[in-house]
Image 1 (cartoon, one colour):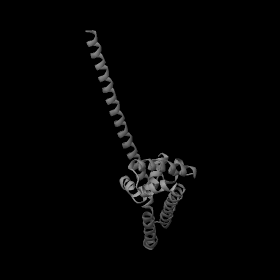
Image 2 (image 1 turned 135 degrees about the vertical axis):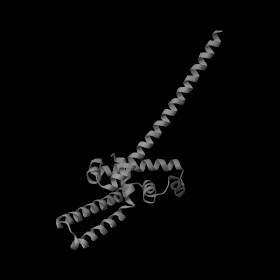
Image 3 (image 1 turned 30 degrees about the vertical axis):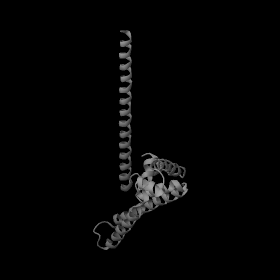
Image 4 (image 1 turned 120 degrees about the vertical axis):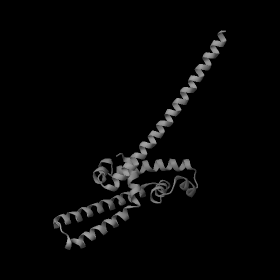
Amino acid sequence: MNQETWSKSLLASYRILPKIVKSIDSYTMSLALGSFSYAGNTLDLMQKIIDNNKRKEALINAKVIVDNTLQDLKPKYREVLELKYLKKTSFEDIAKNLGICLRTVFRRYAFALKSFSAICKSKGYDEEWLDKRYGRDALFVRLNETHSWQLEKNCARQENTVNGKIKKLACAVAGVLATNAVGESLAEN
């Protein structure tokens, strides 16, 4: 995954991390309380509890990474990311809430996301570190797949737009050449 995809995944996960951590706590508690009737190996049970606690720690750290990185952004950029990811606000509603045009929201969002990625990277949370730490976690695998798919979709849309513009340009050029050819043949007669 690239740094921007990881940034989007971290931001998108932020709202649900407390719920997942609480769920891990509940599951760990049920494992511990059910250990007296556990039919399997006690060491296996302990390993499950340890693995759950490691995942919980990693997810809490992801939340801290987002908190600290957002704090390092300028307020106007932080606000756009918080509205988009933490409050799930549409770009149109962000524009209305902030009293700015939609184009400005898109510009701020793009700059904020690049800045968020750069700050993460400068703090040591680059692609490699994030891949190593979260690359196998089911939550981040799914979020990264979603963001990668969206990126591919946007690239395809842009490619189609570019191809469409190239076709229009080619048609226009062909039209000009045809007009010139007709004009030249009329001039010769």
